[in-house]
View 1 (cartoon, rainbow, N blue to C red):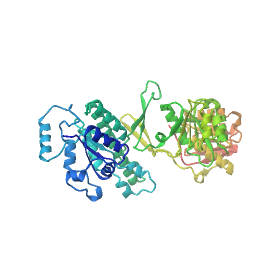
View 2 (view 1 turned 60 degrees about the vertical axis):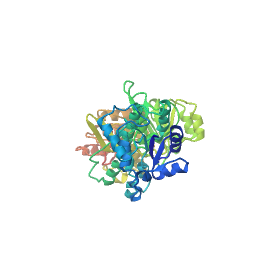
View 3 (view 1 turned 135 degrees about the vertical axis):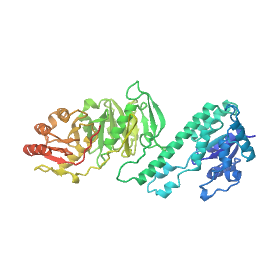
Amino acid sequence: MAPLALLSTSDKTGLIDLARSLVEEFGFDLISSGGTAKALKEAGLPVTKVADYTGSPEILGGRVKTLHPRIHGGILARGARETTGDGVAPSPEVDQDLTDLANNQIRSIDLVVVNLYPFEQTIAQANVTLAEAIEQIDIGGPAMLRASAKNFTYLTVLCNPSDYDAYLQELRQNGGKTRLEFRQARALQAFLHTAAYDRAISDYLAQQAQTEAGLPEQFAVSGTQIQALRYGENPHQPAAWYQTGTAATGWSSAQKLQGKELSYNNLVDLEAARRIIAEFNDKPAAAILKHTNPCGVALGESLTEAYQKAFAADSVSAFGGIVALNRPIDAATATELTQTFLECVVAPGCEPQAQEILAAKSNLRILVLPELATGPEYTVKAIAGGLLVQASDDAVENPQNWQVVTEKQPTPAQLEELLFAWKVCKHVKSNAIVVTRDRATLGIGAGQMNRVGSVKIALEQAAANTQGAILASDGFFPFDDSVRTAAAAGVAAIVQPGGSLRDKDSIQAANELGLVMVLTGIRHFLH
């Protein structure tokens, strides 16, 4: 008897070529449903509709098509097919399954080709209603994938069009049969696919039901490997890059124009750079990072000016850094970027002339990511035996909610500078101190065990440029020593969250020394 294939796909990529090879090269019979059957018929291929094969019409507007014993019996029955033969030895269970098939006029299915309704693509669209999303929850597809994957000993399941050629090649190399190892690998892929699909649905429904009470009671993380990385943070640590969801988003959707393959550390730094640059939209901005900390961030009237100011903030640390820009790279900025060694540059676009200039630095990785401001809803960290999950720190800063606690009031220009410094400070490892002037960082103290040390590092880095500068701190000042140190260096205004039992000591020192002090009421620790 001819081998039998069941084809039911939402994504029709490669479908017709696969079906034609199955029929013309390997003598398969085809059964199919809905739009897949229509596409096969229009291509001139012989196909039996599922409803004709089962004797049961599609009902409920197509919600029920393949949920039928003649379909699932043909999938789940044990016993070798036309395209296998290396399965388990005959057994009473196999004999009984074959008897059941014969008694119910059911054919064994050799190949199941299924991919699922585009649920993730649907919910990614603007203004999608809950009802519209629910209609894209596939029922028959996952059932067939799971049944086929469970019975991989006897049949093959394909859920990704990229595997079609590999399957045909498998048949050609093995006399029209498939190896058990091949079928098991495809079964694993099917289970991973349905797991990711279910995760996307559960995440969406949890989000719909989420209240201010907190995060979902269950939190699942899954991904598909898109690239094996040379190593992780260090050469002895294996690493890989995984894409969450079936649709490429974020860094997996970025276009790499040139340069070497991205490393684990590159991607970690790029994400930190993306988070910083996403803070700035109104004016051209540039951020230069090393080891997830900014070493220079600036705004300018042009992208070139912004980059020059960011580079001048700490030209030593900028060497080998990661650069994020919030405007497409132009020729003038590209010329500046080629003047020093950099690892990666990311921007929402790159002009053709700029790309020609950057090509001179062939190892420099240039990435285009139009949606720089779009990031993950949650941050996740693995700990022994579990996960820590928190909402991403994407609070929108509103100076109108800040409290000026000193006698001296900030000027409008100082208030804008305070906001700039506060936005940068949010992305510096705690304890964080940022000193800025003219919308550019002058000095940054990051990741110190005490705030006094961070203040000292930031002011020393700023050197003689601190007269009239702004200082931002991600945490409160429990003592007035740092306030006095800042004032002695010429700092004119301080922004900090407040909340210490000894806030009054710092406020008193600021009043005594003629400083402006603003409390934001919100803290931005970054561990």
